[in-house]
Image: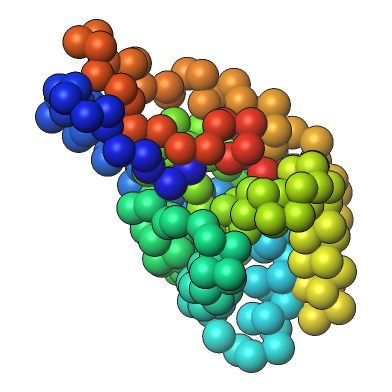
Length: 228
């Protein structure tokens, strides 16, 4: 979802629309980090990349948020041979999600009772859907991991679904081998995040400019929602 330029000769999008998009972007990224932290606290299984981040945390002793930032930066470097162009949202994703995740983990108390962990897991998955809809609808570029999959799709000609499956299976297996948590939360996330993200993407979509100017867009939402 790297931004394409506004059509030549068309008026620029209004300042109000730009402010809304920026707010959506950063609120969405922050909530994404919080939702990932809540999944960690629930302890019932993480989203695919979260499994890898947690496994690397177990291996290195570095906080999971910092690991997320490091992995995001490395994945972003892989965009170079794939000829992907990052947007503001792409670069912001690398840092904001990890910082928000560590911040949330620092203030959320540990939970042990299963009667609390299950609702916490469910709330985290729904919040992740809200966050995904917010930041994708802002149209400032996909996250580095999402862009990796769309880049592989374009370079190989294989379907996005296949590229997503191959990458995320490799990520989950690697993360689990390193000590990451796989469980009912991982399965629930995989089943729910696509429909949730699509629903909230529609709810938070920024209206097209009424003056006929071309909106700043990139990859389609179907290509951007890939973390299932």
